[in-house]
Structures are given as structure tokens and as C-alpha cells.
Length: 394
Image (tube, rainbow, N blue to C red):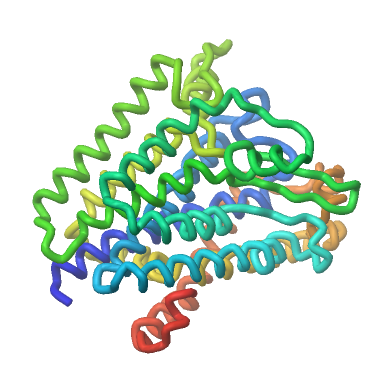
């Protein structure tokens, strides 16, 4: 592999590593911040600027990760036939769906009865990967049109709101409407990541991989990164300013300037609106532009997490959940409250639980530093055992 090829791959892995580290902040907030189980950090009536932008800052994680999953699929298939790439994407997508339902739900809840079934980002990636396995057989222009329609056009469906638990309603919840389905008091299915825009985002990420082909001119690529990044940010401010299309909720003038600013930046993640994607992918493109030829201790640090994302994801959730239990044991309380069941999810057991944002940031830094040696060791193991096919699924 040439130095240029390494640089290309490293810049993508560095960005992925950055968003993985940022992601841990949001998940630590979920399990440690006061009232986090019941209070929306973007609720203008109850939030603070620091809490709001702590949450806003972590918005970059899911869209960048899904987008780069598509890019990685393109790079993986560069030296493979379409049938070979199809087999990998399809089987890995099914594998990720399985991991979401069986492993990830348990890590988030620690409930052996699975009374709270979660469908989150791993599920969205897995399902999108299955869809991408079929899309790759289409001409790239067709994939581009489909991707743009799904990402930019899905907000035209915001007015369609379904109710109940009929088959058509459940299908719609999976596709475009976040929903928690309660079956009595003992079982909840939480459909947290409606799929339509995520599928489109992965398709666009797949096409984006063409910029990182071995023979693609670096100068041309950087021009594209700068144009796409700046253009996405400009589009966000134009559409958000017009306040007509692009997000489920319009911004409004509040009783203070600060709250008005927060309202302006309060964009919808479930499902990710066009504006949400613009304001997250835009800076990501600029980051890739800036770090194209950057290599130092800081980038090497993030590179480790970016090369073992799935391993890091599951490991960091295990550590965060265990530390939350340890915190309850140290400061008093019932550790079993941190076993998140359907009853606990609907009840008020954890209403008074939590710590300050200062503690959240301390725990976040501690978790990331603690995970680093484990991730680095696994990264080196993967690099030295490329003959093991199953490592590509982890």
C-alpha cells in the first residue's frame, strides 16, 4: 500500500475515531446525568446551554458513522466482484441486526428477560447494509438519485403520523416514525432509528468512497471535500432560516436570545432530518479536508478507535453501564435500578438519579482513556491476522 493510500484510509479512520469518542460522551450522559432517563436535553424549557450543546455536539456521531459505513463498504469492495461484495454486505447486515437484538439490547439494559427491546443505530446500520447489498448492482447515478431522494425528500413525509399497533403502523414506525410500543406493562419495543434516511445516507456514503480510490487525484478530492462541507453548512443556514422545509419542527423566536438560538439549532434526529444531516456531515467533510495529510500523536490516538469501531462500541457500553452500577453502590441507592426493564422504563424509579455535567465529563474522559489500550491491542491483532475472515465482521 502506498503512503497516499494510507493517508486516505487514515483520514477516514481518524474521523470515525473522533465521532466514536464523542459518542461515548452522549452515552455517559445517558447513564450518569441527573434526570437523563426522563428529561430531554434539548427541551428548551428545562435545558441549559451547556447541556443543550453537549447533546448537540454528539449529534455528529450517528450520521457520520452510518455515512462512513457506506464508504468503507465501497473501499472493501474495490478489489472484489459485485457478488462477493453483496455477500459480505448482506451477511454482515444480518449479523449486525442480530447483534442489536441480542447483544446490544442486553448491554444497554442488563435485563436477562429482554422486557425492553431496543432498535438503535446498530440495527439501522445493519438494515441499511442489507439494502445497500442490493443497491450496488444499480448504476451509480441511480444510487445517487435514490440516496438524495431518501435523505432530502423524507421530510415531505413528516405529516404522515400513524397510531396503534397494526401491521401498517408498525411498518411505518420502522420506516419513518420513532415509536415505543408497549405490550402490557411487561414488554416494550422501542423503535428508535426510523430507517428511510439512514438507508439513503449509507448509499451516499458508498458513492463517497469513489473519492478515495487509489487513482483518484488528491487535489480534486480536497476540492470536493471543501465544496461539499461548506455547501452543506450553507444549505443548513439557508433552509433553517427560511423555516419552511427540512426539519420536523420549525424554530421559533423565544423569550430570550439564548433560547432562540437553541431553538434554531434544535434539529430532529429521529429520524434524522435533512437539516440534521447537513449540519453534521458538513463539518465532517471539512474535517476530512483538514486532516488529509495530518499525522501526529492526537490523530494516532483517534485512529485506534476508528479502526475497531464495533469492538469499541460494545466495550464502551459495557464499561459505562457497569460504572453506573458501581456509582450507585458507592453513593447509595439500589443497584438493581440500573437494570433497565420495561417497568423501569415506564416508571419513575430513576427520576431522582444522576450526577452533574462535570461528573459526566470526568467519567467520559476516564472511560475513553481506559478503553484505549484494549482497542489498540485489538487493532494490532486485526492488522496482523488479516487472513482471519471473521475479523471483518467485528
